[in-house]
Length: 270
Image 1 (cartoon, rainbow, N blue to C red):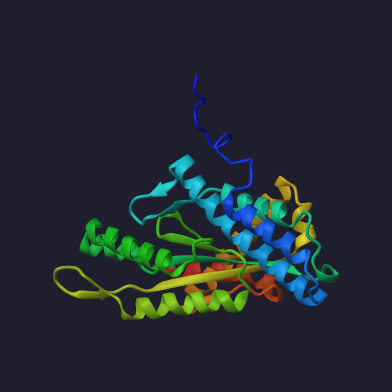
Image 2: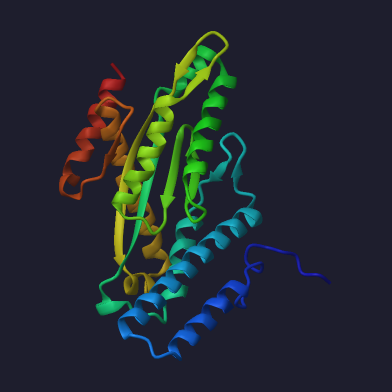
Protein backbone atom coordinates (compact mmCIF):
# COMPACT_ATOMS: atom_id res chain seq x y z
CA UNK A 1 0.00 0.00 0.00
CA UNK A 2 1.30 3.43 -0.89
CA UNK A 3 2.15 5.48 2.16
CA UNK A 4 0.15 8.68 2.51
CA UNK A 5 2.23 11.83 2.16
CA UNK A 6 2.29 13.88 5.35
CA UNK A 7 4.45 16.76 6.61
CA UNK A 8 6.35 14.27 8.76
CA UNK A 9 7.24 11.77 6.04
CA UNK A 10 7.49 14.06 3.01
CA UNK A 11 10.88 15.62 3.83
CA UNK A 12 13.83 14.32 1.85
CA UNK A 13 16.53 12.45 3.73
CA UNK A 14 19.14 12.20 0.96
CA UNK A 15 21.11 15.14 -0.50
CA UNK A 16 19.62 16.49 -3.72
CA UNK A 17 21.54 17.58 -6.83
CA UNK A 18 22.25 21.11 -5.52
CA UNK A 19 23.62 19.81 -2.23
CA UNK A 20 25.73 17.14 -3.93
CA UNK A 21 27.20 19.74 -6.30
CA UNK A 22 28.07 21.97 -3.32
CA UNK A 23 29.69 19.05 -1.49
CA UNK A 24 31.67 18.01 -4.57
CA UNK A 25 32.83 21.59 -5.12
CA UNK A 26 34.03 21.86 -1.51
CA UNK A 27 35.90 18.55 -1.85
CA UNK A 28 37.48 19.84 -5.06
CA UNK A 29 38.56 23.09 -3.39
CA UNK A 30 40.07 21.23 -0.47
CA UNK A 31 42.21 19.22 -2.87
CA UNK A 32 43.72 22.36 -4.40
CA UNK A 33 46.67 24.34 -3.13
CA UNK A 34 44.70 27.46 -2.24
CA UNK A 35 45.45 30.27 0.15
CA UNK A 36 43.91 29.15 3.50
CA UNK A 37 42.04 32.43 4.03
CA UNK A 38 40.54 32.34 0.53
CA UNK A 39 39.57 28.71 0.97
CA UNK A 40 37.85 29.43 4.29
CA UNK A 41 35.91 32.37 2.81
CA UNK A 42 34.85 30.30 -0.21
CA UNK A 43 33.60 27.41 1.91
CA UNK A 44 31.74 29.84 4.18
CA UNK A 45 30.03 31.35 1.14
CA UNK A 46 29.04 27.91 -0.16
CA UNK A 47 27.58 27.01 3.22
CA UNK A 48 25.51 30.18 3.26
CA UNK A 49 24.27 29.51 -0.29
CA UNK A 50 23.25 26.04 0.80
CA UNK A 51 21.43 27.53 3.80
CA UNK A 52 19.45 29.93 1.57
CA UNK A 53 18.54 27.10 -0.80
CA UNK A 54 17.45 24.77 1.99
CA UNK A 55 15.29 27.45 3.58
CA UNK A 56 13.54 28.12 0.26
CA UNK A 57 12.86 24.42 -0.31
CA UNK A 58 11.63 23.99 3.26
CA UNK A 59 9.23 26.91 2.91
CA UNK A 60 7.75 25.55 -0.33
CA UNK A 61 7.36 22.06 1.14
CA UNK A 62 5.73 23.44 4.26
CA UNK A 63 3.19 25.34 2.17
CA UNK A 64 2.40 22.28 0.07
CA UNK A 65 2.08 20.00 3.09
CA UNK A 66 -0.12 22.16 5.29
CA UNK A 67 -1.95 24.28 2.67
CA UNK A 68 -1.18 27.12 5.06
CA UNK A 69 -2.28 29.88 2.72
CA UNK A 70 -4.44 32.97 3.19
CA UNK A 71 -6.47 33.64 0.01
CA UNK A 72 -7.22 37.30 0.82
CA UNK A 73 -3.58 38.36 0.96
CA UNK A 74 -1.78 35.55 -0.88
CA UNK A 75 0.48 35.18 2.16
CA UNK A 76 1.10 32.30 4.54
CA UNK A 77 -1.12 31.97 7.57
CA UNK A 78 0.81 32.30 10.80
CA UNK A 79 2.43 29.10 12.04
CA UNK A 80 5.08 28.77 14.74
CA UNK A 81 6.72 26.04 12.66
CA UNK A 82 8.18 28.68 10.31
CA UNK A 83 10.54 29.95 12.98
CA UNK A 84 11.38 26.43 14.10
CA UNK A 85 12.17 25.41 10.50
CA UNK A 86 14.54 28.36 10.05
CA UNK A 87 16.65 27.35 13.04
CA UNK A 88 16.50 23.64 12.26
CA UNK A 89 17.94 24.39 8.82
CA UNK A 90 20.68 26.56 10.28
CA UNK A 91 21.57 23.84 12.75
CA UNK A 92 21.66 21.20 10.02
CA UNK A 93 23.88 23.26 7.71
CA UNK A 94 26.33 24.53 10.32
CA UNK A 95 26.51 21.62 12.76
CA UNK A 96 29.83 20.53 11.24
CA UNK A 97 31.02 23.99 10.25
CA UNK A 98 33.24 25.96 12.60
CA UNK A 99 32.88 29.72 12.14
CA UNK A 100 36.11 31.75 12.30
CA UNK A 101 37.03 32.32 15.97
CA UNK A 102 33.42 31.52 16.84
CA UNK A 103 32.55 35.15 16.08
CA UNK A 104 30.08 34.77 13.21
CA UNK A 105 26.47 35.37 14.13
CA UNK A 106 23.24 34.52 12.39
CA UNK A 107 21.09 37.63 11.99
CA UNK A 108 17.33 37.74 11.51
CA UNK A 109 14.92 40.68 11.32
CA UNK A 110 11.22 40.43 12.16
CA UNK A 111 8.77 43.08 10.95
CA UNK A 112 5.14 43.43 11.98
CA UNK A 113 3.02 45.65 9.74
CA UNK A 114 -0.40 47.04 10.55
CA UNK A 115 -2.68 48.68 7.96
CA UNK A 116 -3.54 52.08 9.41
CA UNK A 117 -7.25 52.70 10.08
CA UNK A 118 -8.18 49.53 8.22
CA UNK A 119 -11.67 49.43 9.70
CA UNK A 120 -12.45 52.69 7.90
CA UNK A 121 -11.97 50.99 4.53
CA UNK A 122 -14.52 48.34 5.46
CA UNK A 123 -16.98 50.69 7.15
CA UNK A 124 -16.82 53.57 4.68
CA UNK A 125 -16.22 51.80 1.37
CA UNK A 126 -17.31 48.20 2.01
CA UNK A 127 -15.54 44.89 2.52
CA UNK A 128 -14.73 44.57 -1.18
CA UNK A 129 -12.45 47.61 -0.91
CA UNK A 130 -11.06 46.29 2.38
CA UNK A 131 -10.18 43.03 0.65
CA UNK A 132 -8.55 44.97 -2.17
CA UNK A 133 -6.35 46.78 0.36
CA UNK A 134 -5.32 43.46 1.91
CA UNK A 135 -4.43 42.09 -1.54
CA UNK A 136 -2.34 45.16 -2.38
CA UNK A 137 -0.39 44.91 0.87
CA UNK A 138 0.10 41.17 0.40
CA UNK A 139 1.35 41.66 -3.16
CA UNK A 140 3.81 44.33 -2.05
CA UNK A 141 5.28 42.20 0.71
CA UNK A 142 5.60 39.09 -1.48
CA UNK A 143 7.13 40.95 -4.42
CA UNK A 144 9.64 42.79 -2.23
CA UNK A 145 10.66 39.77 -0.13
CA UNK A 146 13.21 37.16 -1.22
CA UNK A 147 12.41 33.46 -1.72
CA UNK A 148 14.02 32.66 1.63
CA UNK A 149 11.90 35.18 3.56
CA UNK A 150 8.50 34.48 5.11
CA UNK A 151 5.53 36.77 4.40
CA UNK A 152 2.66 36.03 6.77
CA UNK A 153 -0.84 37.21 7.58
CA UNK A 154 -0.66 37.15 11.35
CA UNK A 155 -4.30 38.09 11.81
CA UNK A 156 -6.78 40.78 10.78
CA UNK A 157 -4.81 43.69 9.34
CA UNK A 158 -1.50 42.61 10.92
CA UNK A 159 1.04 41.17 8.48
CA UNK A 160 4.46 39.82 9.46
CA UNK A 161 7.67 39.41 7.49
CA UNK A 162 10.56 37.25 8.68
CA UNK A 163 13.70 38.41 6.90
CA UNK A 164 16.13 35.51 7.20
CA UNK A 165 19.89 36.16 7.27
CA UNK A 166 19.21 39.89 7.48
CA UNK A 167 20.90 42.52 9.68
CA UNK A 168 19.18 45.80 10.54
CA UNK A 169 20.44 47.71 7.44
CA UNK A 170 18.86 45.00 5.24
CA UNK A 171 15.55 45.36 7.09
CA UNK A 172 15.66 49.12 6.61
CA UNK A 173 16.22 48.68 2.87
CA UNK A 174 13.19 46.37 2.73
CA UNK A 175 11.07 48.90 4.63
CA UNK A 176 12.14 51.77 2.39
CA UNK A 177 11.00 49.84 -0.67
CA UNK A 178 7.63 49.05 0.91
CA UNK A 179 6.99 52.61 2.06
CA UNK A 180 7.99 54.10 -1.29
CA UNK A 181 5.51 51.79 -2.98
CA UNK A 182 2.66 52.72 -0.66
CA UNK A 183 3.33 56.44 -0.75
CA UNK A 184 2.65 56.19 -4.48
CA UNK A 185 -0.34 53.82 -4.25
CA UNK A 186 -3.98 54.89 -4.42
CA UNK A 187 -7.02 52.60 -4.17
CA UNK A 188 -9.93 53.34 -6.51
CA UNK A 189 -13.14 53.05 -4.47
CA UNK A 190 -15.36 53.92 -7.42
CA UNK A 191 -15.93 57.38 -5.98
CA UNK A 192 -12.46 58.57 -5.09
CA UNK A 193 -8.82 57.52 -4.92
CA UNK A 194 -7.71 56.84 -1.37
CA UNK A 195 -4.29 56.43 0.17
CA UNK A 196 -3.21 53.37 2.16
CA UNK A 197 -0.63 53.80 4.91
CA UNK A 198 1.20 51.27 7.06
CA UNK A 199 2.77 51.30 10.49
CA UNK A 200 5.50 48.81 11.30
CA UNK A 201 7.62 47.59 14.19
CA UNK A 202 10.99 45.92 13.71
CA UNK A 203 12.92 43.59 15.99
CA UNK A 204 16.27 41.92 15.35
CA UNK A 205 18.39 39.09 16.68
CA UNK A 206 22.05 38.18 16.19
CA UNK A 207 23.02 34.79 17.62
CA UNK A 208 26.26 32.82 17.42
CA UNK A 209 25.79 29.85 15.11
CA UNK A 210 26.98 27.47 17.81
CA UNK A 211 24.20 28.69 20.13
CA UNK A 212 21.62 27.93 17.46
CA UNK A 213 23.03 24.46 16.84
CA UNK A 214 22.43 23.56 20.50
CA UNK A 215 19.05 25.29 20.77
CA UNK A 216 16.14 23.05 21.74
CA UNK A 217 12.49 23.43 20.76
CA UNK A 218 11.50 25.32 23.90
CA UNK A 219 14.31 27.83 23.41
CA UNK A 220 13.31 28.31 19.77
CA UNK A 221 9.68 28.96 20.74
CA UNK A 222 10.76 31.45 23.41
CA UNK A 223 12.93 33.29 20.90
CA UNK A 224 10.04 33.36 18.42
CA UNK A 225 7.73 34.92 21.02
CA UNK A 226 10.43 37.39 22.06
CA UNK A 227 11.07 38.81 18.59
CA UNK A 228 7.34 39.01 17.94
CA UNK A 229 6.69 40.83 21.20
CA UNK A 230 9.52 43.27 20.50
CA UNK A 231 8.24 43.94 16.98
CA UNK A 232 4.75 44.47 18.40
CA UNK A 233 6.07 46.96 20.98
CA UNK A 234 7.84 48.90 18.21
CA UNK A 235 4.64 48.83 16.14
CA UNK A 236 2.71 50.49 18.98
CA UNK A 237 5.35 53.21 19.14
CA UNK A 238 4.97 53.83 15.40
CA UNK A 239 1.19 54.12 15.89
CA UNK A 240 1.60 56.51 18.83
CA UNK A 241 3.98 58.74 16.85
CA UNK A 242 1.37 59.31 14.13
CA UNK A 243 1.26 56.16 11.97
CA UNK A 244 2.58 55.85 8.38
CA UNK A 245 6.05 55.07 9.74
CA UNK A 246 8.19 52.32 11.20
CA UNK A 247 10.07 52.05 14.49
CA UNK A 248 12.92 49.79 15.53
CA UNK A 249 12.67 48.10 18.92
CA UNK A 250 15.26 49.54 21.29
CA UNK A 251 16.36 47.11 24.00
CA UNK A 252 17.81 49.98 26.02
CA UNK A 253 14.27 51.40 26.34
CA UNK A 254 12.55 48.11 27.15
CA UNK A 255 10.92 49.54 30.26
CA UNK A 256 9.12 52.25 28.28
CA UNK A 257 7.05 50.08 25.98
CA UNK A 258 4.25 49.23 28.39
CA UNK A 259 3.61 52.96 28.82
CA UNK A 260 3.76 53.48 25.05
CA UNK A 261 1.13 50.80 24.49
CA UNK A 262 -1.09 52.23 27.23
CA UNK A 263 -0.76 55.76 25.81
CA UNK A 264 -1.73 54.60 22.35
CA UNK A 265 -4.77 52.64 23.59
CA UNK A 266 -5.89 55.65 25.67
CA UNK A 267 -5.57 57.99 22.69
CA UNK A 268 -7.43 55.60 20.39
CA UNK A 269 -10.33 55.31 22.85
CA UNK A 270 -10.86 59.05 23.25
